[in-house]
Image (cartoon, rainbow, N blue to C red):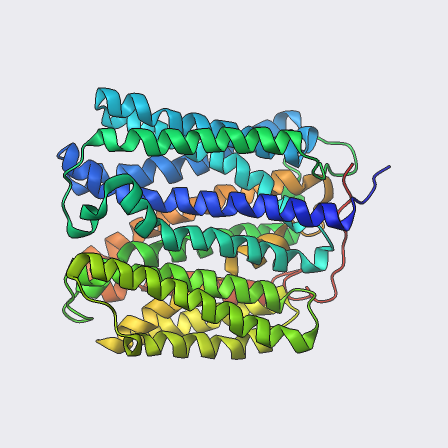
Length: 480
């Protein structure tokens, strides 16, 4: 027999797990700083330097695949040990990955760094397999999307501040000016410190009292998650969402450098990354409030406050980076188009309120329209329309994930591993985009992104369970 943990205990657990979301967002974005550093210190070409992302995101697919195969052969591992213990395991593995940066720097071995990144990403993958469903079941299932949106908002905060804070702490302010005066030894202390932090958090998680959910029913062998039709649609949706999001982020600087778009130098266009990734943070925090259980009269003021504070953080990070690069600040009036897009998003949050599925469909529709608009315009129009896609990507992962695992019961952890596996879309779709760029040009290459959003429109409006998400109140068993 299962029991439902006290609500106050659930709240504490949610706060604790949300800190992990911030950490993996921060750690993931640090890779963007490692690429230029390794390229300079090891005298690499761009393909070799990009092995940083290949090693990191490739580990997501490999570890998720291994987890799935174990689940199919022996039964779901995390469902056997509990979500709490799964989080502890992932934290320890991530800590070991951070510690491996020390010998890699000591012996100046690039492939040891790549191995360290694989181990680090393996730990983060295990954390994600456990944390995403754990957040959704820390309370009523109908508000699971709200909790996951809020947690993902803090993940995005890690993305926003990592280029600024991480750049200073690890490389010094010279990183913004293209100088690489410090050697590989500069990586030792920061990553060892992060490794210690991961281990300390693992010990804390093991010692404190958290709801240790496992699903009711016998844990069976076999590929059971695919028996749920709505899960299959969501499985594909994660592939197209992650692929589209990563493709936009990957091509942004080259896209803005294109003479037909903006013709900006790389140093000028890089500051706009904060707005691209910051839009995710704004939308996720607003989505958490929109789909949450706050009183309707309070939702709009809370959403406005969240948007205003988030925009201020994004502006501060982007303007700080601009100051370190050129000695100048970004004028507030220059970001008015971004503020206008944020204001426009309120309309679609209102239309899609209380329905995670409908919100996916609406936001995918806007993202598709912005993609088309950016492909067919130039200058400021092309700039802010492609940046606005990040804002409307915001609620995708959380809503798709929670809709996909809804009602899976004992298959929840296996389903989670399969959904995390589909992060491989972030590796495959950019390859397709690269071929399209070489063949037809960078504007036309956005067609692969447009294709992804068309599928997400279908998923949000028509796929099973997403379409009827308002009335679907299937419950996940409590923990013990």
